[in-house]
Image 1 (spheres, rainbow, N blue to C red):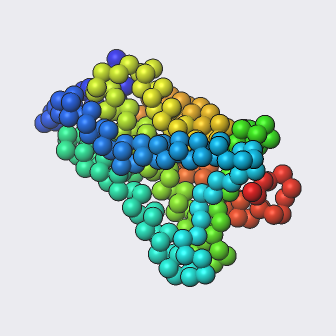
Image 2 (image 1 turned 90 degrees about the horizontal axis):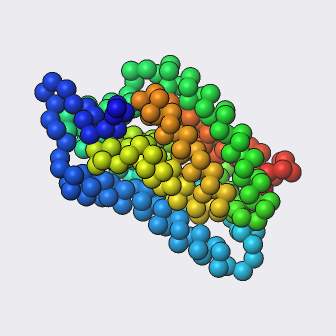
Image 3 (image 1 turned 180 degrees about the horizontal axis):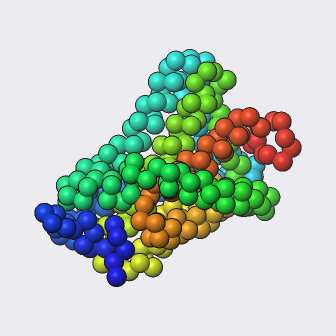
Length: 270
């Protein structure tokens, strides 16, 4: 039985059109990935190779996630931050357009809408609590073992817009990744005839690959998270809870680092 939002007939119904042929869907999927997380995966691989070949261990190198783009010029910096967040969401707009084209209801077809906000936030909060703590322990263990870089979640100046930008960045990451790597990709792979297991492996490997710049720990941890998210998406038929969970995890990581860096001994600061 096809999973709703994943099989070849997903979104079909009275008045609904059939999706384009497989060759068109294959090209479309590759283009969407190349414009978003696929390009990030290749960049991450190059970055990881550079870190591996650099003198000194991985844990003595840092991967900074939210850095200043115009040090000493806060208004220009803010403009660049907002520009980066907005343009990173363009592939999501493209996915919404492509899903509307096949009359699937746009992002509603993958459960990213406002129909069940309580469900999405409640399940997302529980999922964030379960994954966030274990993810932190995995990161600390991987860094101690020398297979992970020191992750610096933020290096923004202490200005009034710092926390709002960090929260916006967390939400942007969540929307981009869950809409494309889970909802859209699983739908297209189902339409292309991939088995559910093959689609799960592809989605989780892709998620791990664009976090490889953090090291082996970042790759493995995100791959496991990706597999869990795929299974829950198939159970709930919604990416809404996944977006909520991911946004909460990143918000705690970004804002928590800003509050605790240099104040507690257990948190590496690069």
